[in-house]
Length: 466
View: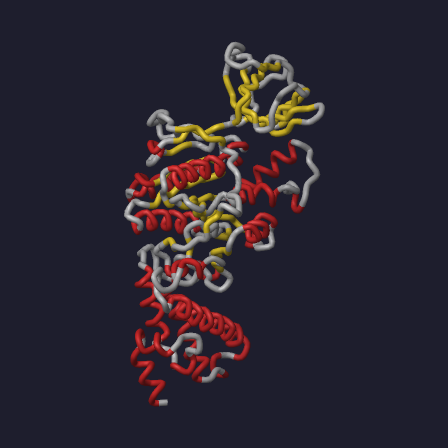
C-alpha cells in the first residue's frame, strides 16, 4: 500500500461518527481522495473535508466502524474523488458511492470525472426553450416543465410522492421514445422503497434508459451527501458529452440536508436555523445550479428534486431555501389526497417560472397560456367560494357562483384526478377546453374570441346571441 501512495499518516487524533481528525500534513488538498486501511487490512475510502492550520478532517464514505486511532493507516492519493463514466451505465443500479448494486459487475469507463462538479457559469448558460411532457395534466398544462429547469416537488409524509415520481420517470422515457435519459438518485430510502423503484423501472422497460443511484436508510450517512453529486456528474456526462436530454430525479433532499446537519454537528460547527449548518443554502445551490443548457453544446440537464415538508411546513429551512434557488415548485396536496384524487397536485400554489419559455406557438399551442390562465382563475375563484359556502351555505350563492363551484368540482375530479393513465399535451388541452365549455362566455375573460371560436364554436354563437 505504501508503494501506491506517497503520502501516509498513521496517527489519528479523534474519530467522530464518519469523521476522522488528524494533525495537519503538508501538501494535503481540499477534497483530496483518501484511503484508510485498518488493522485487519480492510480498505475504506474517504475525502478531505477540511484543511486547517492545525487539523485535517477526513470524511469516511463507508463509516468509521472498525477504525482504530493507533493502528489505522491513512494514505493521501493526491487526487480528488472521481466517478468512472460510460454509456454502459444505462440500465444499471449503483449505490450512493457509485459502486454497482445490481450484481452485474464493474463498468469499463470511457472517462473519469470529479464528482464535485460546479454550477454552470451564467455566461455559458443558454436560455431554456423546449418543454418535457410528463403525462400529468396538472404539470404539463398548468405548470409546464422546461428542459434545463430545476423544478422541485414539495410533498408531505404519507403522500404518494414515490408513485408520482416513478410515474413521471416512466412517462417521460416513453414519450421521448428513449431519447431522454432519466437519472434517479435516492437518498436514505427504505428497502421497500428500493424494491418499489427498481420494480417500477424494470417492469415498465424504462430501466434501459435510466441509471439508478440508491442509498438505503441503513447505508452510511455520508453516502447521502455523495448520491446527488454522483447522479449530477453522470447527468453532465450524458448531456454535454453525449448530447442527450437528461432528467435528474433526486429524492429525498430532506434526507440529504439532514446528513449535512449530522456531519456539521460532528464537526462542532455553529448551527443555523433548526440546527442546519449556515452554509446549507450554498450547498443546496451547488447541486441545484448544475441544471441547465450550455451555449453551443447539445443536451440538457433538468432537475426534479423531491423534498418532504416536515409536518407540512412550507417554511422549513430546506423547503424555504430550495424555493429560493429553484424555478418554481409543484406542491402535492394532502387535502386532494384525502379526497382520493391522484396525482394530488395542487395547481394554485404550484408554479413554473420558466413555463413561458417552453410553451406557445410552434412548441405546444398558441392558446396554451390563455387556457392555463383561465383555468387557474376559475379554479382559484371556486376554491374561495367553497370557503364562503362553508360559512353561509350553498343557498346563498347565485347562479353564476354555482356554475363556478360546479366547474371547480369537475376540474378536480376529471382534470387533476387522471390516475396513472398518461395524457399527451394535446389531450390535456382538450380536457381544459371541455371544462370551460360549461362556463358562460361572459365569465371567460382571459381567452380571446379567436380561441373560443376555434375550440368552443358554441360559445362564440352564445356570445353573439347575447
